[in-house]
Image 1 (cartoon, one colour):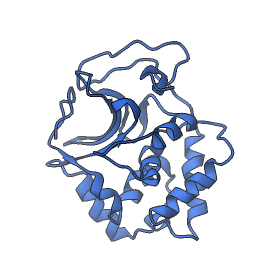
Image 2: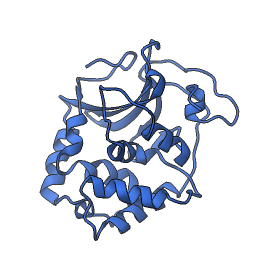
Image 3: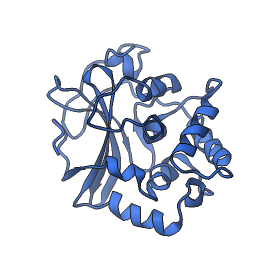
Image 4: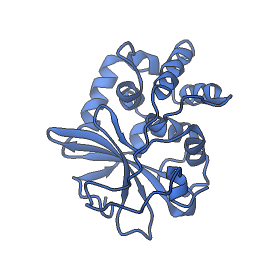
Length: 220
């Protein structure tokens, strides 16, 4: 697999992994929950989580997860498995661009642009095409670590509960799991006004004052 302008390692399609035990506890546990979270909250056990962690952090295979959105854009999640420099890169790509645009890097903490609930929902429910994750519950949870908003709108908790149940979160743990995920997202709001990918060496397009990620892409 090739992502133009992303000088990473051996990229492989990761989309089939979202249906395997242990994926969601790995993807959401660290960046979006506090130390009290357990894999069982997501319907996984410790063995599932450990086995999936080895797959996701394999330096020989960097999983890539693509979320197609309108206008030919894709939100792309890459598990960057450099030895000694593991992290998760969140990119936007488009067929007309010569280089992917990295908008967030995560090495235990987010560094870069984040999303509001409105932007997240716009991506999740955007008309999509084949070639990535189409299930809206998986799309929401995959990009949920990017959410940073203090005052979430009515219905956000209900929508997140439904998404968690759809991917196998047990009925009795869904409320507390959603509470921790949304509580983390409300903890801070941090927007870097600069685009740019340290992997591509490009500073990217200039940021309009007050504009969000989707507005910069022309998706309003």
